[in-house]
Image 1 (cartoon, rainbow, N blue to C red):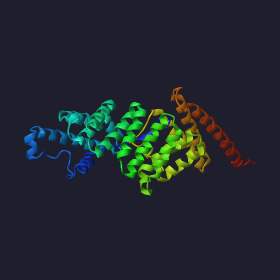
Image 2: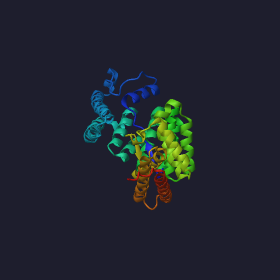
Image 3: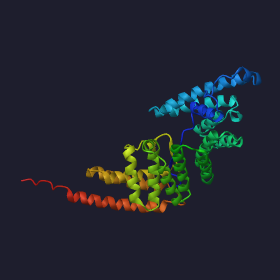
Image 4: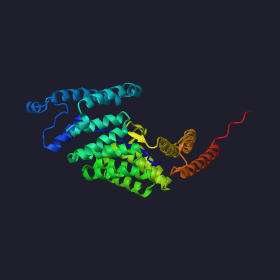
Length: 344
């Protein structure tokens, strides 16, 4: 999208998921990351118990953070969440997470760094993990997380390559759809509309009906913006209408796992969303209001985008087109309005 539309950012795997992933890779029974070391492990590594205790304490903080993050109390997340994350980071570092032989610990450590805003540190931690050549499930998770970090750092060519690496390892259709859609975002940033549209369409083709509710909505929005930027406004609005059959209130593109790069790209989504609502509105007042909001969103994009932005000329053309459509609609509504009764 604009340089990169919002993108659905996959949350890093939690402790239980990573432990199960580790078990699959090793053939062992799943265990929690904080499982107590065996007698033999203690003999080989006297500090194992201490590290396990530190990680267990940190994972408790992370679990509380995740519960808070899913709550409607956003102000508490912003106020308390960073405190818990910083404490978890300190505990992980005391436990030697950066060089741990447990790749699940290193993946979670990178996740903590990213959540704290240290994206460069997260990328470095993931790159270091990949240099150890961990099992395939861990490599897939690491490449996926690294691609997201590269996106945040503006390293779009590296991001595309990272998604290729993850796709080569990921067997599950829904996860592949997410990777393909995110990669399409990077192509959008670089101005490769053809690759972006193809990536979104391929992602949607991999999804079943039920998966559409979880993964398809944001991909449909991404495809809508890509189609608009390819010159197909009608196709764009149709895909937004389809996305809203799964998510009427547009909750997924405003969720915590979705971010816009650059931030002002959100205005493009907003403009198309309001434009779609304007055409669908039954009441004249609602239609007029939606057109006004669409025009305002186009103006917001134009005001924030630098002169070098790939899509700035099109945004200006869309604003003018939307304004003309709004004026024509207002004229029709005025003509259709019943005349006020005359007084006798």
